[in-house]
Length: 231
Image (tube, rainbow, N blue to C red; front, side, top):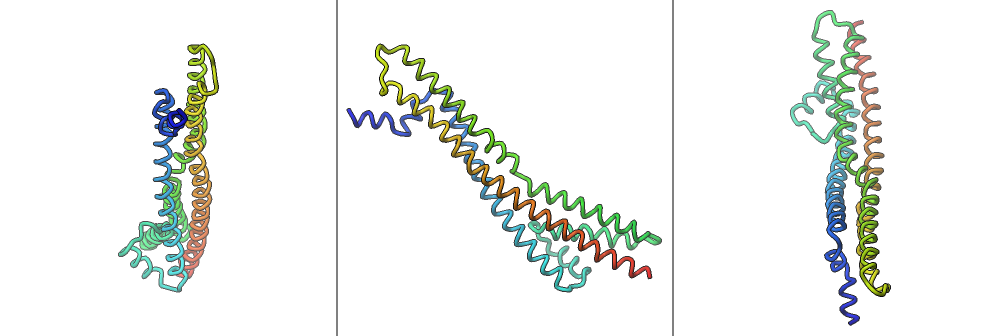
């Protein structure tokens, strides 16, 4: 008798005996959780690669290498993970193109370079912000979706009480337990998503800040270069 009660209250038994609505809620939450974890691993790998590529390119840039040579190296063997390299290539390409036009005002050259690098930085921002909206949505809505499943399950349990002569804890417990599982799954989906969102947002902002700093420093170098050639 006790073994049957234990089996009846096992996790799998509670899930399989839950109402269709509660099972659907659980399925949605499990799918959201699995998708979140896939995105978390992907974004972690991407951000680590972006950080390594940034440090590597920054070291090459400040090593004293000729900018034209660095541009050729970056063009011949581009690193798709290096946002800083993409910004450098965009700025130097525009700088070289405008410098070749006769009678081009130095300030107009620098305006063009600044615009090109802003566009490149915007593209990198879009890359870094991918998956963040989904993680934010999972983190903010999963507890409420789980709560909906819990409320629905408890309602069914109380409706079932009306059909029995004597209400006991053993009568109500399975229905309430299966309902609470929905809330537990909702929290299981939400907590990692919220932690990952905050971590990825902070790391993305750090990378973007370094991109803007690099763009300002690179513009200062090109500014000196274009004005020194005019003298």
